[in-house]
Length: 404
Ligand code: 3PG
Ligand code: MG
Image 1 (cartoon, helix red, strand yellow):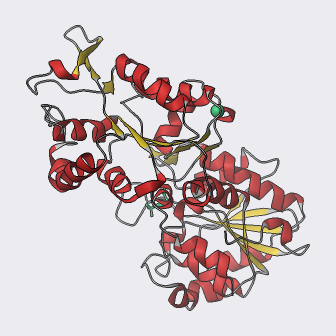
Image 2 (image 1 turned 180 degrees about the vertical axis):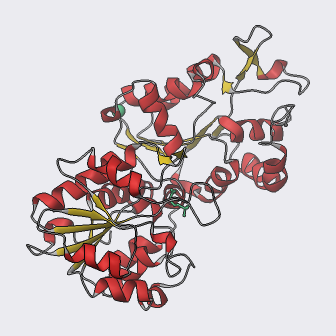
Image 3 (image 1 turned 30 degrees about the vertical axis):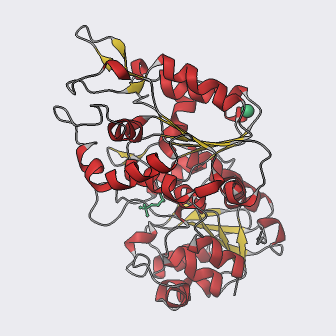
């Protein structure tokens, strides 16, 4: 496995430029607290404690989207996880930013403005091109070291991720190391027993691609969520069709049904589909129906049923490793959390190697009081985790491993 130099290898008293991933849900213009803040805080705390001058960069949203905001609120949230302030400057690499960077003392922390507010950041280009941008050239001149902690953004070929490693001595942060090791375990580790993948969520296109590409790395799949219903549809059941107002199924079916049908045929023995599903009855209560008894698509389903959770449990218990990608139901609504929470509980109780991926799924851990310590790793990565599961290299990781 190619390895990194880590923040423990940085020479003392360095001026360190650190890329974090603080990209978060935004409500009323403010970032909502999530694991990314508490996780990256460990890297920042260690760098500041070591006496470095710490300057942070991160992105939020994309130009043109509603969640494309300043990082001022992010600085405040991050500092709530540290024993010191995080200063903020509303500039990425102009004179104002350079002045603020110059003023940072040993052990102090400064966050620069949203990297995506500078034109050099976004177009995806090879590291060599990114390294020549004014953004990278200007900032690298005032730093001794670059740290990438943003594993969850490492699938993007953006300047702040792939440009700096070519021009500055570069190191992996705590999050980068932990995410890389856990998320690539599926390709880098030899597991003695069955490797199971739990597949769910609403972005079926992504997870179906993973199923089509993992090959021998995975021995069995336990399905739920939108992908579960689409596979049931391929197996001949009248589910996975949009009903009133829903726009999750038909479009993703159109795009993926050939892959679904092929994967289902090739791996029928290894793919486990829900045997029952949950819906909202006339009284607004959770109700369940056996899949074999559904003969007309008139109801929307929001969770797998209890029989499915029971059937999945022994398959999890005899697994050597379990990788979760996506929730089994709409767990934000307590009535439809049984599938997701039930499966997470079983994984937590078993002593298998386990990675819980995707911001959404891991939110269920917090929401329902499960303990993060019961899992080998709870990932803060979405798109990067998907790529890791299929063994696809991440440009941000490769740039860091190669160095200047
Ligand atoms: C994420 O939030 O998943 C990463 O930060 C990547 O963000 P992006 O999808 O906007 O590039
Ligand atoms: Mg466990």
